[in-house]
Length: 339
Image 1: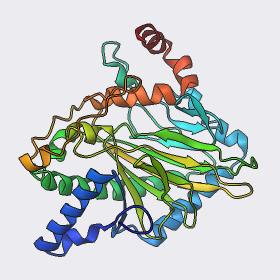
Image 2 (image 1 turned 90 degrees about the vertical axis):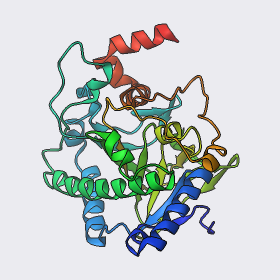
Image 3 (image 1 turned 180 degrees about the vertical axis):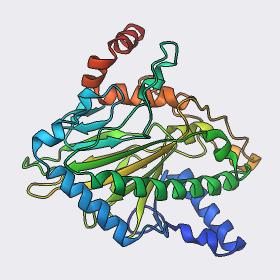
């Protein structure tokens, strides 16, 4: 472990011969068995692409309020578009951030017999005043999708499965990019930028504005800082990878503390997950790994579903109750009756 509280892994080691690749896979397995978080370098993302994404994010949040609200997520049944400050919740409490959510560009599914989670499928909302945002997001998405697939192939081998294990079970991946700004708060006490939570899917690659902190990861019951590292992503696994390994790999609680005014923080998480209708089967771990599997976390308030779409829908309905109430009152009523 480093002084940064999380391991640092270099993805380019996978291309440095079979012995070094095997050592990388061992380090990857150990890191995500231990804490579920690590820093990742060697991704091939250029400083030029990082700068373009950063500039696009700053330009988006600098748009007039009217331009951002024209694509507010309350107009999208698919939970896409802009969320104003205070418009998202974690554990029922308001998150102090604004953001734009961007998923796979798809036609809405109108079949009334389709599973509920297919309501998440649909078009994005793009700001007409900033056409360049769509271009840089597409480039970012394509590059990070390649990084995610490379990581998942390494995990598969490290867990004793065929290299294409995750490729075979992903179908058409469900991705989500959030471009987030945490405004500074003048309050003397730390504020909830985003509350403590575990990601509901498989894999998250987080880019953080250079020089900015605020992210904290829970280790051994304590919150430890995970500040930005130049040229590195913060990577964490979600609940589905914990499920697929029956707790050998662990999804970990994390949160963001808002910066103090007048500072702010830009971050861009990229979530790489299976198709909404994909079900990740449990991996048959080698005996020595299976003996260290801790079982899936049991939390009655946060059930982990094997079918990704059910996990994703659970997360979105909770995070955006205003969107849920406007567009999906039947789902809200059904879940209230079941609780």
